[in-house]
Image (cartoon, rainbow, N blue to C red; front, side, top):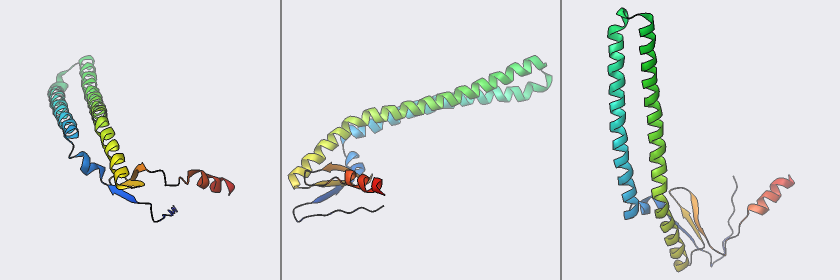
Length: 157
């Protein structure tokens, strides 16, 4: 990938690591604590489900030789249902943790974005690069967007 930046003497590029800034923000720390608390509750529940599964499976192993075929099949279905419940719960917990994290993180990210924009303007910076994600956090008025020109060149070939 070829990337060319033409900088005049007045243009300034700034950078920051958004991860390290976020970790110092109290509202983000609260989000992390809340998600960790929720994760512990989910892990405790998952441990209970796994213990229940293990007990049921062990009972099945211990008694299977003396069971009629119909009872054997019913217990096998119960074990499969328990296993399915564990997988479903684990997925739902992961989805909920991710959603809670993203929802809780959003206000901190908005506040960070606003602060970056204000700091960039105050420092006379035209472009701010986030070293944590390799993304741009702020683009000032003197920076040229090469998207259209690049697409034109690519489509011409």
